[in-house]
Image (cartoon, rainbow, N blue to C red):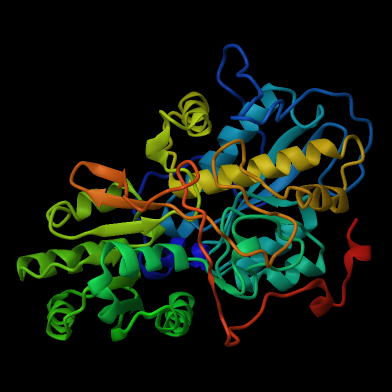
Length: 458
């Protein structure tokens, strides 16, 4: 569910941001770093992430004695958002400056699905890539069968649809905590049981009319009442947005909604909040989702930030605003400043970087015999993965471990700030007991579903 929320905007509207140069399709991008001394290969508390060596073999597709070729999925042809490609450029440049992975240089193929071309890009990746690293696609279920059929490992920045969330040969990115749990139990219980207890009897949900987020609303329909919240209002809005949010605001006010979960594009949410504020109606809280955790939302909602309480659950990822106290976040910002000064490090970019680091550490442990089996098994040995300090410890060994940590940001006129959610473990609160769904909401695909097993993975 965490990653479904991040991807809401892809289903709602085209985001016009800076374009990114670089090859796409089957063109390999082997980035060249700016001149100057190489930056240390340490990252946070991870030492020697990349290193030189003298490899001699070509043990798997996409792996030669000279380089490792991976794929990076993106929808930037639709969103015009290059954030995942920027991370690939930064990480591979930095890693190659330090010798690559045991002497093998990293090269990446941009697999631009443009929202609807997931299967086409996956078939290309199946022919060329060793693994998929640090990318995502909103409609990722369209490619999961092909990925499993060609036994292609995946280290995604985020996952979206149920068929892919926690599917076989996938490591990290919240997939390990995506089922069968409501991973937002922690923040929601803090909101309606601690911070604003009067709101428990008046919770509402507005959801974009798209299959990705409508399935989330169905799950909330089970989990929130079971946790003690009364859902008194639910509504759909066209995924492309509406010209006038007044009818929605009037319904929210008429029903007396005190806590609102908005599952949709944050641009639409900003417009709704402006109408609510103009009506002098203030909710106790609004769950804007991590999709809104951007400077853009602050700008769009600036007239309402003082009037409405906007919160985003980062699900155990250290916020970008914590660079002063989190060396790993500062390290990420420094690497961006050096290797992609024109780019912007985002929350989704941090999630991508978490996965690049996991892949690199696992691949390095395989030595000269870098195979798909080795890299997947090595990554799954990480039972308390923090990516050098970018996130709360996460268990990569299983897809069904319950998450325990969360952290919450609040949007204010002064910017994104850490909410007063009573953290108990550094920047995180780790006493969450996530709700376990009792109903069936689909399942991720396995190798067995395509007639394969781990013995077929080379």
